[in-house]
Length: 68
Image (spheres, rainbow, N blue to C red):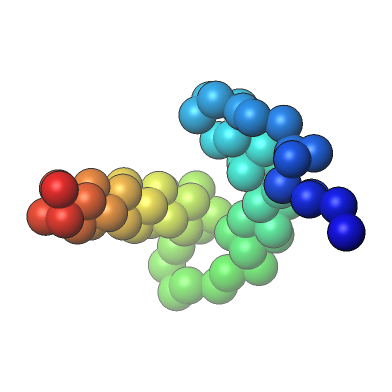
């Protein structure tokens, strides 16, 4: 049985972020385009998602600091 993990190249943080983005970008664009919120246009939906993502990153950082 081969070790699959040994065939996965090591990537730096920047490369992992770009790989992740490429994998989810189309789905996020579709989500934004298909999300109907009274009084909100797609740009406002995108901004709300960005704000939520920022908050989530801060939450993860806070949790990480609490465990170290």
